[in-house]
Structure formats: structure tokens, C-alpha cells
Image (cartoon, rainbow, N blue to C red):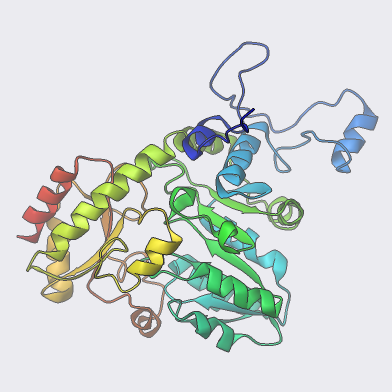
Length: 393
């Protein structure tokens, strides 16, 4: 008898954590908005609160709809358990602070999202936690930055917005030798194209607002790791600080995940074509996309990822003013922050998403004044290219 075949990623994205309602037979997952839950007895209530029995007591502690999302994301990332949070930044907070105490040290890659940079460079120092930022493309830089008080290595790959790729396996080996945990932001790649836990990371996180949602209508975050860590992160971070996810937002993101693979695979194919168009256009100074052979870390991306994603970065000849003129001329692409939407979004990181990062730090990370970040959507790629062509003038 042949071995039972494991379901594929698309199948799991649709089915994991869900089942028809046992009473009504409803196929779509239920949206449970209740804040509190009734116990059949005082003894059972005490058991649930003590963690001796599975169940729901109060939605700040857990919610049936949110639990569906948590099981689904954990399965897609290959982790034991998942934790949903109110936003991507709440996920960064919940994934890192449980490992840290006053006097500890973090090594983080450069070119991280500006909110993450602010957390590590300003908020954590106020708690007595110091961070050293290193070139993420240089694996040995992480080892050189380690100190006796280092507790955590933080990765974001591909990076935002430079798309710099970090060798997760190499950094994980360095971390294991030093007894340091690795936390990886997998927002740009999604588990469709990259699974950091399989490559040696201890915890993976997402801004679920982006590709998991995919429709620009719900903000959320997600953290995946061991069951023990997720229980601890929930108890210490989410329950106490209150960064819980709305059940309605969880319901929307569960619905978005149903089409995750369809969307990101189409977006990646389109991004490859858009990047090739820009790379051959004399009006463009340079293009960064992991799927281009000219991308400095193309071979690493090819080895580590199953696809190159839908983010394309480029700089228009003529500098900041030329880039601003181009973005003011787009018609199909929307001049807006965020990414991973079904609609193509274009932004200027230096003045928008990364304006909180000091210029010297931003430039050192490769985020130039004229860099334009494009999140390729699900429109017909010919229309995206035509819009960029006319916008470039």
C-alpha cells in the first residue's frame, strides 16, 4: 500500500483549521465576535483559566475565529503553533521581547522596515536593550557582532525596501554555536516562497496586513514558533499588553489566505516581467529584483527561495525629482504605502515608509534618496508595464 500523500500548500491554505459548522453545515468559517464565554461549571471555568483544559474564556486570551488563523499560519510556516497580533509591529514586539531583558544585546540586519528600526534603535534602548545593525548580505558580520550578552539575531529577508537577501542557514548555524535565537521576518517572501523555520530560524513573523490579507482591508500580524514559545509570547506580550487581533480582521485574513498561492505566484510572474522591462529601459538608472540575473544575490535567492516575490525596486535617471515626477504620473499603480495588495502600489521610501530612519543609516543600508518601491499587483502585467512606460515619460 502506498504511503498517504501529504496535502500541498494551496490545499492547506484553504482547509487547515476549518471544518463545516456541526449544527448548520455552514462551509465558510464562523465569525465569533463574543468577548466572553459561558462555562458549564465553576470547575470547568477554573480549569480553562489554569490552562489545564482547552477552551475559551475571554477574547483577549483567545478567540475561535482568531484560532483558525493561528492554526493556518502555523501550518503554512511549518511551526508548532501560531499567534495572531493586532499588527505587524505587534508581531515584531511579541516575537522578540520575550527573549530579552535589561542588559541584553541584539544583532539585526540593516535595511529593516522603519518601524522595526525604531523599535530596536529607540524603544528597546529605553529598556536597556542594545542593538547592533550589520550588513545582512555578509553572514560573517553577524558573527563578528556577537557579544557575551547577545540573546537574539533579527533577520528580514528579502529586506524592505532594498530586497537584500540574507543566508538564513548560514546565520542560523552561527546563532546555534553561540546559543542565540534567530527571529526572521518573512513578510516579503511568504511561506509560498520561503520557510525560515526549515532553514534554521527559531521564530518567524509576518505583517499579515500584506500578502496574507492581500486586499488592503485588514491590519494584523502573525508569529510562528514552538508551542512553548507561542504560549509564552501570548501570556507575556499579547494578554498583558493587549495587542490582540479583532476577530473580524482575523476572519478577513483567513479568507485572504484561501487565495494566497494564486495571488503571490501570479504577482511574482508579473514582477519578473516588470523588472525585465525596467532593466532594459534607458530611463532607469538601476533595478533590484532577486529574479534578475544581474541582482547581486540572485544565486542565493535561487537556492533559498522557491520564487522571487512581487517587490521591485528601481531608481529613475534624474534622481529624486525625476522619480517624484514619475510617481505623480502613474494612473493604474496607486501611490500608496503598504504592499502585497491585489492592486499595484508604488511608493518613495526615503520620504514615506523610511522617513524615520536617519539619512546616514538609510543610505548605508542601500535605501537611496531616489529609490522607488513597487509592489506588483494582480492586474494584467501588460497594463502595469504600460502605466510605468507612460509615467516614465
